[in-house]
Image 1 (cartoon, rainbow, N blue to C red):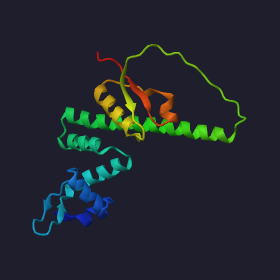
Image 2 (cartoon, one colour; image 1 turned 90 degrees about the vertical axis):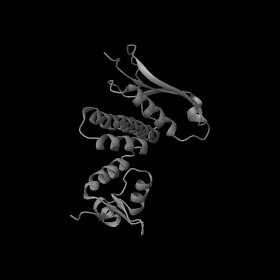
Image 3 (cartoon, rainbow, N blue to C red; image 1 turned 120 degrees about the horizontal axis):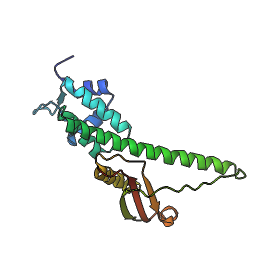
Image 4 (cartoon, rainbow, N blue to C red; image 1 turned 30 degrees about the vertical axis):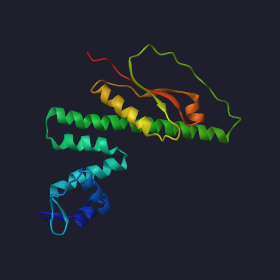
Length: 195
């Protein structure tokens, strides 16, 4: 492999568009090894292929840029235990968010299927759980807000949980949040207290 790669070559190797590579440079996620001052051409070191592939994979999984930046910083810091732990925390937190989103999608699919058969008998169960420590974020969701408030709340909860073991997240929501698109929400994350 060459000692340096043009942006086009890196694009072909990683399947990241040239536009994306430029954007990642502007956002300091993947800074070229060299930028020609006369032409502005970007050149990358072969060692930057792996971080570029990591970026592509995590962006395909909708990892927010702030979390991706934290992951790359921890990964590039070396093999120290704290750095590995920080990188693993980013991945674990995102995995919990993906699992939560998958659960919501599965429930939505099940509910849509039920709409196709309105005569089907439904079973509802109630389960009593023992009291549990939870970390919680409460907020008023303004009219017209997208779901970024939920992602922000989950990032705050993940940061607060740190390395404590956690269970799947839950929430309590005002009914008008669903009917009118705004209202009070509390998102929580069951967590084991530190020893």
